[in-house]
Amino acid sequence: MSKKPIILGIESSCDETAAAIVTENDQNQPVALSNIVSSQTNVHKEFGGVVPELAARSHLEKIDLITKKAIEDSGIKFGDIDAVASTAGPGLVVCLSVGLSFGKAFANSLHKPFIAINHLEGHALSPKLNSNLDYPYLLLLISGGHSQYLVVEGLNKYKRIGTTIDDALGEAFDKTAKLIGIEFPGGPQIEILAEKGNKERFDLPKPIFNRGGCNLSFAGLKTAILKISKEIKNEQDKFDIAASFQNTIEQIMYKKTNIAFDEYEKINNTKDNIFVIAGGVAANKNLREMFKTICNERGFKSIFPPIELCGDNAAMIGLVGLEKYKLGLLDELNFPAKPRWQLDEVASFLKGAGVKI
Ligand code: KG4
Ligand code: ZN
Image (cartoon, rainbow, N blue to C red; front, side, top):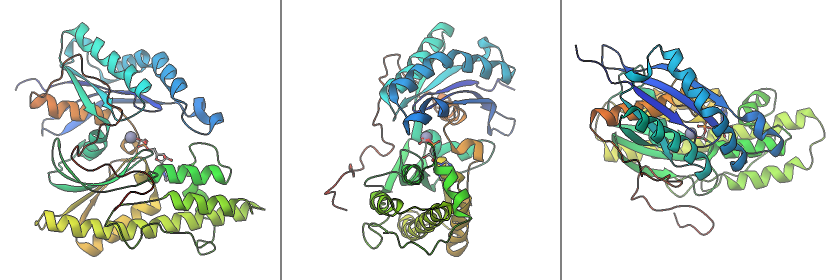
């Protein structure tokens, strides 16, 4: 039996420094032999958001240690690595540069190929780790920086059918949390507080609910919550805001996902429709239940990556590296950081006031 490729994956696009060793098992399924993630939450907490210069400095301080640990934990030796795959975009340019330069130097010192990875492609393919997931599928990517519906037809074959025209969904969760006094990153706390609140108490806006196809908009919610948050008198008020926000998001995502399913069915006329929900917000349990319900109603199969692969990690970067390596899709050492690298590079740019959808 020929040796399975072994890929070192590196991720530093935002505020997680991560390294992983990825290979294939005997069933040819991609598997992570190690997956080390170091989060910088404590570095950015007092600033209420990610500070790029501090994030980059923190990546620089840790990337060699994290990589060493990923190699040690996997049980392989340096010389076993066949290629190094680093995130090249999208993300904060100062942060991307750390993992990108480190990955290139590492590959060069081993005399092994270097592969530049799109971070979004990592999220998009993440459910393939430890499972047999065939193309095509409909992907909803909901993270701190992105919210998109994409038809995934294969490696590097993406068609975007919907996107946010302003804030990303994770950003909306984080901003709502901040407005009701929860420390950054508050997104995961919202669903915990929401359990104690009255979801009907506040009637929040649902921007572009009845137009714009499956495009999304969340900025109006933040403005509405800013107004309400000025009247907060006690803890119950906070719980009620969290519950009303979570409920509104569920209604928006239910409606938009139904539209995305319609669009997908027009493009892909197959019976075995698959819906993959990935990115940090896919960890939200209430949203997961809602997505499962809608999939039952519409005859789609729902797939969520394991919780530890929903947030940023390097196993998903190593996984895309593995797929590219097997196809001989390697990159030169002068590959640049691409802060705005999109998955569907022909999709039009839909951001900002005045956008027509
Ligand atoms: O994918 P990710 O780790 O990083 C990006 O690429 O952005 O996503 C992070 C985002 C943050 O906005 C965080 O608040 C949100 O995912 N998030 C959640 C939950 N867990 C993480 N939002 C809502 N509910 C959660 N349980
Ligand atoms: Zn991400």
